[in-house]
Length: 111
Length: 117
Picture 1 (cartoon, chains in turn purple, cyan):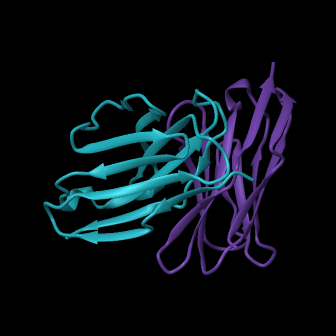
Picture 2: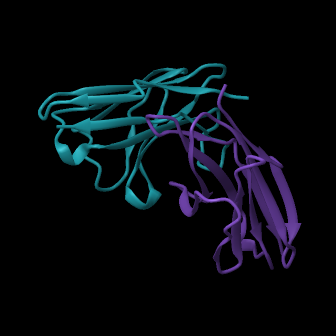
């Protein structure tokens, strides 16, 4: 059965901390892994990863994929209160390019 | 964990026909269901929010007469694309929540890929 598992489900940190969010997957015919940030309405796209070991970086956020161990991590350094959100991981897979989302990690950054 | 299914997973139709997409929460009662459309470069656009037994709330720019949403029960919402045209070809994703707001955990379906010829 295809599945995408995110951990932790919830995380509370203080401003300035560094956090690492995890996403592991078991799917048939993996195509890509995506990270989204959801604050208000639609999730905002962060990264798409297709190749192992290549870090993608955007400001204080970075992400990397390990296709051998079937997981990805999303790092946020020097966290700010504005980073508080639900972070979603999704995997495109299969011949029809299906999409499966994880349950998300709820990050709360306290001042 | 909570499971949300969508049917069909893929549909090809002729221009001018209508297509219905179902979204079901399999093991929980979904007070609220959300319909998204995925555009190129992976961004998701929220189309509408539906609450069981009431009319859907559409986002600005989304034609409610073209994208009919029905949330008839706590486990089923449907999106009907009426008189589909090639520009409606996209990946439609639903999510379901047992809460009322956007900050409640949403469980996403696997998506439906629509191709209008």
